[in-house]
Image 1 (cartoon, chains in turn green, blue):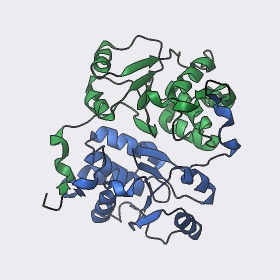
Image 2 (cartoon, chains in turn yellow, purple):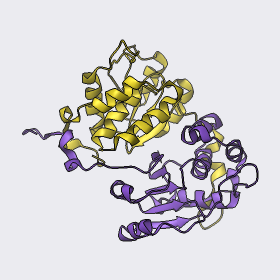
Image 3 (cartoon, chains in turn red, purple):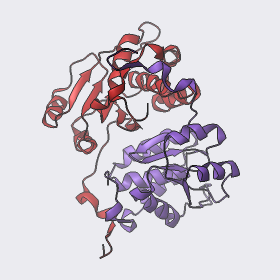
Image 4 (cartoon, one colour):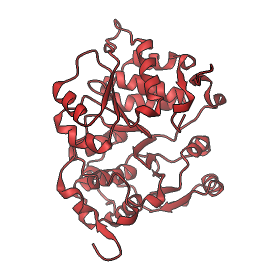
Length: 179
Length: 179
C-alpha cells in the first residue's frame, strides 16, 4: 500500500477462504447457478447479496440453509421438479416455465438457481433462459454440456430444444436489462 | 401482451439469433470470458456494451474485429502471451499479473477476456482472479477444467496454484464491488 491509493490484493479480506457451491457460475447479470449449497458455502453466498434462491427440487430445504436464508432475508422460491431419469420421467415444462418467469423478474435479483448437482434441472432452466435470450442452440447446448460433464442427458437437451418460449410471459415493468 | 404490462418473451428482439463466441461465459459482475470472437459474434457482443477487451495472444488483432471494436468504442488491451505448450513454454507471471490488474479496475468494465480457445490463457487469468477473490483452490481448478474440457493442462493448474497474489496491486478508488 502507498499514498496513491494502491493496495495489495493478496491482503484482501483478512485471509478467509471462500467456498462456492459445487458447479457454481454466473449465468447473466443478476443470475447465478450451482449445485446444492451447504454451510461451508454460506460465507461465499453472503457476498453475493442474494435476494432469492430458485430451488428446483421437490424435497424440503435443508434446515441449516433455511436458517441462513432467513437470517440474510433471502426468499426461497421452490419449484419442485423430479430429476429427468431417462427415459421414464419427463421434465415438467410448466414448472420450468414458472421458474423461468421468476428469473425474468428483476425484483428477484440477484438470484441463485440450484438443484442437487447443478447439472440437469439447473441446466434445463438455464437452457430455456438462453432460448429467451435468443442464444443459438449450439451455444446453449454447449453450455449445458459444460456443466453436466460426463452426466450429459440427451432428454434434457431435447427438452431445451423443444421448449416453447412463446408461452413464456414476463412483466415489462420488471424485465432484466438483458432481455 | 395485455393491459397489465405482461409481454410474451417469445416475441422478443424480432427473432435475430445471437451467437456467443466459443466457450463464452460470465465470470463475475463486469467480467466475461470466451474464445476468439469473429464477425458472427458481433451482434451478441454489442449487447454486452463492453468497454474493453483483454486480449491474451501476441498476434495482431483480426481486422474485422478491430473495425467492430472501433465503431463500438471498445478499447483492446493486449497482453501478448504464448500458449503454455507443455513442458517448454511457461506462462509469464508478469503478463498475467498485468492483465489481472487491468481486470481489477472498474474503469475497464464491462470487459471480455479472450485468447484463442478460451481454455488455457483465459483459464489461467480467470484462475488468478479467483485466487484474488479468495476462492478455494478446488473450486478454482474445477472451473478451469470445466472450460478446458479434454485439453486440461497440468502446468496451467500448477501456474494458478503457485501464482503469488501478494504481488498484485490495485487502485482502491477503482476496485470492483466483488473485491
